[in-house]
Amino acid sequence: GEKETSAPNRATSPYISDCSRPTADLAAAPRIEPRPPRPRSTALDALLKLSAGVDAFSNLIGKLIRWLVLASVLISAANAIIRKAFNISSNGFLEIQWYLFAGVFLLGSGFAFMRNVHVRIDFIAGKLSKRTNAIIDILGIVVFIVPLCLIMVWLSWPLFTNALATGEMSQNAGGLIRWPAYLLMPLGFGLLFIQALSELIKRIAFLQGLRD
Image (cartoon, rainbow, N blue to C red):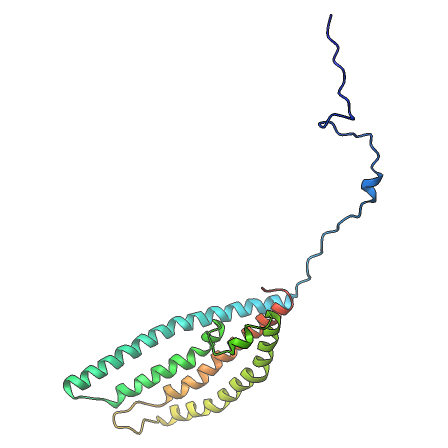
């Protein structure tokens, strides 16, 4: 006859779950609710987008500055070769080097601030937490950098407009017009000002947990 197969024992079979077992112990276990996402500030999100735009503009200025450095090196080398080889010199060549150096440092200040390559007290900052450094940066931007930039733009702009209106020239023979050099001052501190605002936004966003 046919062999009878016994049903597997639910108590001993590891492959069959015991559905008849009461679930009171499972119901009594505490439920882990997912943490709600941190509410984001719409205004701060908009400011972060503005900050990203300022950073992109500063990167563009940084690329321009590389060409200013190259031009300064080439003019300096050409001026030295001509002076040594032909005993010819020009105050105009010397002054254009000064203008280019001024442009590199003034126009590049905001770019350096963004890349965090400006002068810092690293042996102190390295011992502090990121949050503490962010607070110090905010205080430095609000108390020192922003007022300095506004004062320098306010003081240097009349120098530029006056030199442009009068056609002021260098007092050296064969020198250059002065207004481009004066223009570098409000431009440089203006670029540093907008980059300082960008860094301020990023530090505040970091303290709010919206930025790493």
